[in-house]
Length: 232
Image (tube, rainbow, N blue to C red; front, side, top):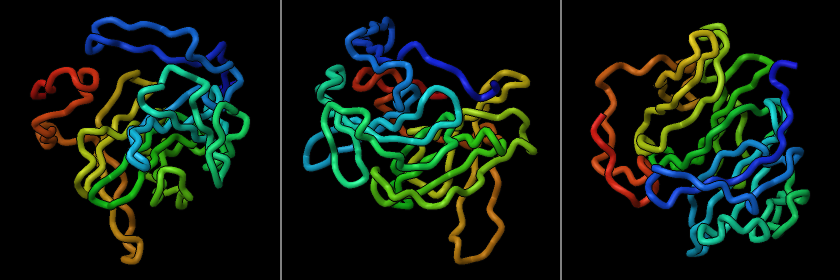
């Protein structure tokens, strides 16, 4: 059915040369029925340890969201992954992960925003044709209510809203969004207003050409720690 599909497995591919070539590590995989069939990954240091936080959903767009983390140096070691139970971390047991955002959650992205001092999560609600935003004070949540950012009434067959890590230190939000009809990706822009104002939220619109100013250095552009991003 639309929005539902099955997976053989999910796994990790890595590059040691800035993305020129990639290697699939078949030891670093999860079964197809795992809650980590599709993921969003965020760097976050906790207690002095650099982790990768892995937000996962099953195959398709109708599962709930679960959370795992792994020390960055052990990313290819599936036995080292810790799964969030809602109150603590359990190592090596994906089934221990509890739902942190209820279904349905489609393609998603998560990002720390230094301007709002909040964790931001954006994802597709396929059943209503909405891209929504949630906020949290911690990467584990609890996550606030879903706020509509853009709807299928504006952009039919929208999906895959991905917050860009280049612009996370200001009041405006930038994200890429896929459109099935023309089958391409657009850069979108929106802004937030305090809920207390009672003002109608500003829905997202295509980014204005020339309005984006990337940072001078951007370590994730060509593989972490490789070379600076080229000007766009």
